[in-house]
Length: 339
Image (tube, rainbow, N blue to C red; front, side, top):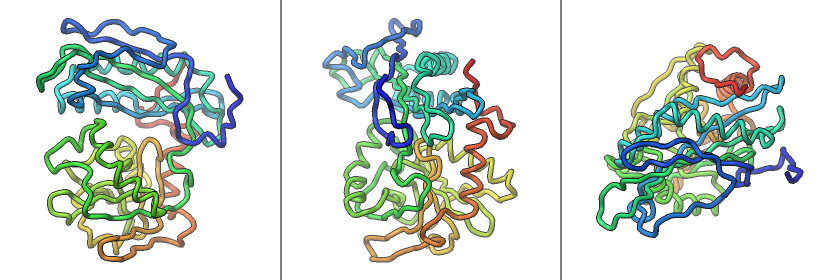
């Protein structure tokens, strides 16, 4: 393996030694297979290519101070992939087979798991695609499930440092009753144009408003949104956003830290009331936000001291990271130890 600078990995693709695969044929899932190839042989009329029959997940494994490897909430990721499968009519990968494949991929690529305190982790990408050929708009009869891994640094280059978001009302990520709550590629394709424009203008991401009325906050493209005021953790309730497992975890931890938690519609006007704002997700964990620029109204909302994350965000971030690295007890059964 090439000598990796663990502290300067960035969030990008790297080959590991092995990936795990499993085929769905003749109405049933087969056995897990180990592969060393980073390519797949796919029929040109596969439904994944023509009709977007694909779903994916993202989760992480961490190496603790004691050298122990832990995987964060892989059962929840398995359940969320099943939700995506229901949404776009794919064969559901059983939770047990999903978790077995993830565990095996981590174990077989153990040498790629970054050392403790490097700021890096092992990113795990389960992927399910329709491989059966169809030319009519209907579900495939064959599917391929894969799990591959790679060492990564923070999703946002700034790491745990405040960045700015931008609101641009002419862009939508997902339709009100569409696929927004499923982790499917089409949602990310729909956000690429606005995301590229935001980065060109110096923002880390777009803060989307609801697609129907443009009155309520939805999410930050690659992450869920949360705001904090009056010792309360507030996050949007919407049928158009992906239910983030990190966000779910932070809500539990917020209550444990003595905060109130509200998952509800969050009106745009409430932006002025928050003491702290953040984006959260697997890749970023928490990305603190120092400002939100409303490009349509040339208006800024600014938070904190502009240089550091807020007090509550720091507590939540440190608490979650401590559980992931085994420095605090896992009272919730979130972590799977890799023996």
